[in-house]
Image (cartoon, rainbow, N blue to C red; front, side):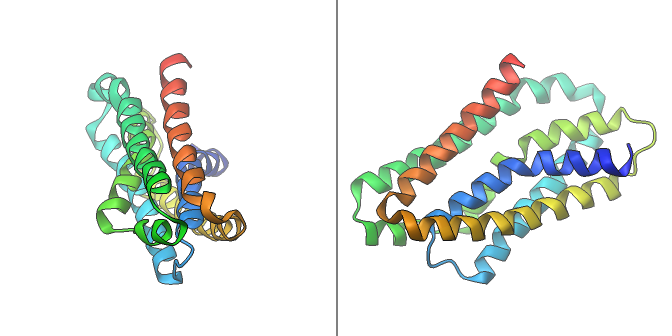
Length: 188
């Protein structure tokens, strides 16, 4: 796998993390730079760990992993999205903005949800003859972290303009992302 192929793979894998980081930026208007860095690092780390894990699991388990990865992504993203929608419906704008807390547990759930595909990519890496897996996962992690930071910043700008609909919008985005992953895996 050459540099360009790996770069395109990294960018493709990071798109889910980018979308979720935009949502985090939309819903957390009081997000500090340190928290934005946490989001980027969390998503980058998970996007690095998952293909490495998939690589070591190897080709023997490929059918089992690819058979359930889309279900896991759909369930996790839908759970987070539904929770956000319910918060938006049941609380006022000020209370809603405060209730969307980026706790460690919440970030880990998001990190797992956006990096499930990377596990399957790691399994496919095991079939390649000339791949430096440590270089590959480092590049994937770095690209994801950078794009996630850009996503948070973009989301914050959008969220400031959208007002009370930010949490509702974010929830819908996450559910749609889960459905997109599910449809891609089941039908394509």
